[in-house]
Image (cartoon, rainbow, N blue to C red; front, side, top):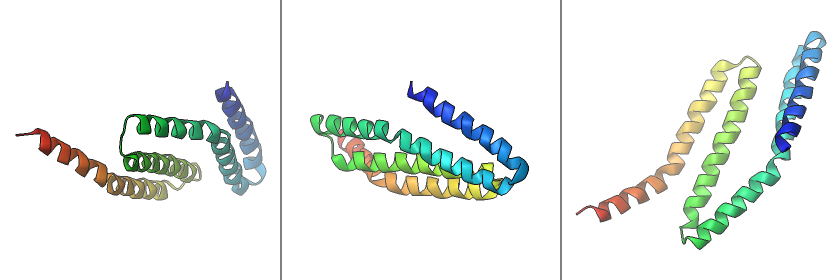
Amino acid sequence: MEVIKIIGIALIALVIIILIKQYKPEFAIYISLLTGVLILIFVMDKLTGIINLLQTMTSKASINSTFLVILIKITGIAFLSEFAVSICKDSGEGALASKIEIGSKIIIISMSIPIISNLLEIILKILP
């Protein structure tokens, strides 16, 4: 039922934003940003539970923990950049949002190089 709480927070913020935009439109972005941070804090418990589960599964399966750390960082970058892109688009800065998207994609690709190279090494060992 956490999703109902998240939707409730978002709808309350939406009503506040609509009301504030009539009088002080520059404050609407602050309400949106605060709501996004509040929702992120609210789901942080779930996120730490997922990370702990992945760490447990990685140790049981004898998978290199470095890869798990890289995947968690990549996922974090994707979530944070999507959050920043949404904020930029909400405030009417589509050009800045696209620059954030491009930059985050380049960072994600550069971070995934060790995983890609390891996979290629495994494939080369399998092939005759």
